[in-house]
Amino acid sequence: MENILTYIIGIGAIVAMMLAWVGVQSLWRNTFSENISDVDVLAERRSCGNCGCTKVCKKEKSR
Image (cartoon, rainbow, N blue to C red; front, top):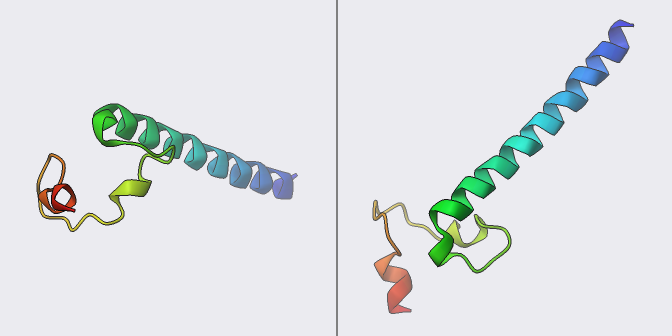
């Protein structure tokens, strides 16, 4: 019985993390909807240089 409980906890934790990720993606999509063109809303943020700007990056606009 103890082994089954361990599996249930493990599977539940994975499902909970997946649901949390969906929540993060949804919040990100709502916050930055005007700048998103990809289904994976965090995909376009990979090149962020962490410059502190809160709008569309000036580096991205100049390209």
